[in-house]
Image (cartoon, rainbow, N blue to C red; front, side, top):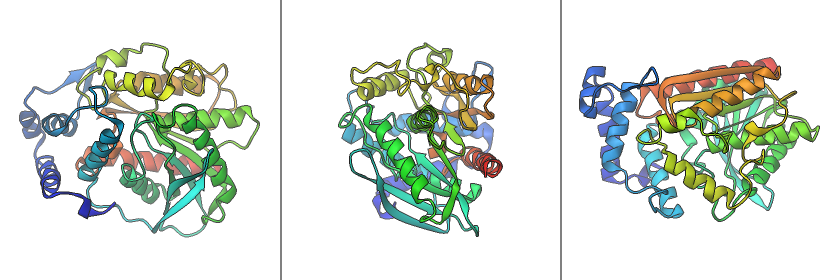
Length: 354
């Protein structure tokens, strides 16, 4: 991602957001234009409250409101550039091609500074299976690489509507198998290859983990599931609580799944992995949710299902944050601290798996 891609207005927007987010909490609440937000016994972080207010002033239409996928991808890419801040330093970054189900996929390999063979984390970006790319999640992958001390292989799978379900699942499975087979060539520990993602990417990580267990293939060393989308059947309470005004809307969720599933059965476990008949023998999982997120309840239900089946699970709710917080680390210290904490927990879980 190059700084030159930002216009003067966008650089001013970034600078403005960074400046106001350094203000005291009381000032942030005042500038947001509404009282401190408390929902379901949770207090919205002041950074989030102000960022949401600022976003409402500059954001254009949404996918659910008629924005075309190409325009939505450009909009998310722009927001990622504005919110990412200065890139976190890692050892090296390499552009690569990895195997997909229907041909090569673009990928980005982040190499840690730490010496010796380090674990490898294959990461799938979020974006409702419709938007998102290697650039939108570049800074998040840098933070994971640096603070978890792991190689990160970020993979750009095919997106809907051009490639609806099960294209993303098939790509994710093929890419993870490629990573397992080529970890040594990447300089990583081939015995410790984890799998992760956020939102739609968390769905893919969970689905591929399930598939490999059922195929009696070598499963991931661990799963990192950040506010994953795992159930398209049940009407979870968080859907209504946070249906509008918290970055990811219920209307957006409906659009994403309709576009991705494209008439397929949304109860298929490759779409709704929470509907699996059994969770026995699944890999250890770090499940992270955001308190103000429509996907909160299903993510925590997935963690509970794994725990009830005897799997090793750590479930961490970032209570004051919203969906997408890992993409806001450049302007919000609360978001950055949360992702650094996630990276530390990932480091510990991969260490115990090696």
